Image 1 (cartoon, rainbow, N blue to C red):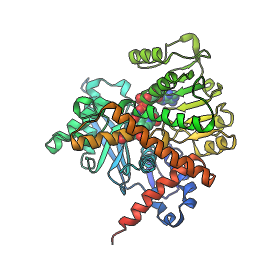
Image 2 (image 1 turned 90 degrees about the vertical axis):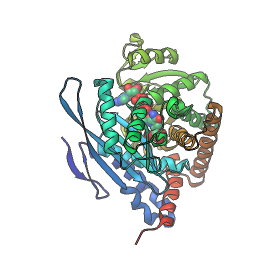
Image 3 (image 1 turned 135 degrees about the vertical axis):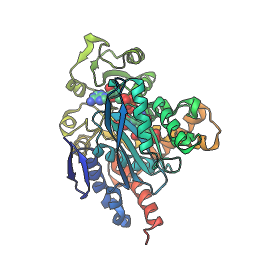
Image 4 (image 1 turned 120 degrees about the vertical axis):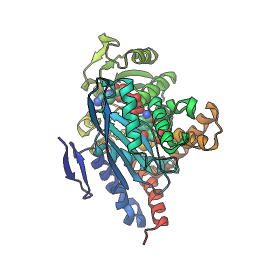
Length: 430
Ligand SMILES: NC(=O)C1=CN([C@@H]2O[C@H](COP(=O)(O)OP(=O)(O)OC[C@H]3O[C@@H](n4cnc5c(N)ncnc54)[C@H](O)[C@@H]3O)[C@@H](O)[C@H]2O)C=CC1
Ligand SMILES: O=C(O)CCC(=O)C(=O)O
């Protein structure tokens, strides 16, 4: 049941679970505030999303019945540019979750110095239980409902869990029909035939691998022959696993929402990807290697890549997680309490707002290409992605070293300073 609650910032919102992503985001803001100097007086800005929309998304189902779904779009900040962030289709999506995810987009975009605020959207629906026609109707209705608030200069959605290039094509088409002209720059992550960018599909997983490689280099842990566990085998986890394997690592554990596979000899990621492409889930792949959910967190590794949902590494799992480096492909997979435990144990956490920023970085490239109607080669895209990610990585790593703080706190310091300096410069009127 949905209940109206009031959080620590005194903000009311509707959620069946008042404890999760938004609360964790607020805690992260509290942790960074003492590091912000004079800008700290503006930090409440980050605790109050600028715009929060809840929309009803009704459709006629294939059997003629009428169904309603709850949709959300949260624009957390718009101080540094238009909102930017994905749209999630998942049965557990809540306003609380979308608020947290939008907050993390503010931090991520600023940490990478992309000219955006932060936003996120979602529809509380299980896409696996709907036909392609029903999903098209949901997507089009949702887009129309939030239509006045998005646009190439206002807020630019993109794919996230449960959405893909096709969803973005429908969003672009619906928005374009409503404004009376093709507007490719309203969403990113589109198909190539509609102004999409080469490299966007793989960009998030590629960025995860780039930050893992940079961390490994500085920590003296070779990726070649390292042991890796990947949770989530979709867009992000699938690409990251393939890149680790191509670099000579051994993927010893894979988990999605249907199964956990553990193989000490190494899982063949190419075969597992081909299997999930056909069956849309891991269940049934290598039945003799399946394990329980909890065993995934108990296998000894060098790298753990959470690339599924929030809150997967809590303080309890952190206390025993047998690894050396956690690279957050997912948004918000590690709770603040778990961060402390991992730090005490000397385990490096490469935070989501850096590790998974490859996706929004190539989304930025897509948006720029759409504006100029001039498209870059894949080599150009990947070279620019490397350059931006390594630049952000270096700045965050150096600050963490200088101040003796975690990589997450360092990323938040850099990002919050940029956002709040922009907020201060713009001023408040009157
Ligand atoms: N797609 C993108 O470009 C970006 C995605 N992310 C984040 O990466 C994460 C994954 O996103 P995508 O790969 O795009 O989604 P996806 O929908 O392609 O894949 C999600 C995967 O997670 C698995 N999963 C879901 N719940 C699970 C659970 N409780 N335990 C284990 N596995 C579970 C699913 O079975 C699936 O394999 C999310 O946190 C998302 O916000 C972050 C930046 C960009
Ligand atoms: O590509 C984008 O605009 C946003 C991707 C996203 O939702 C994320 O980074 O979490």
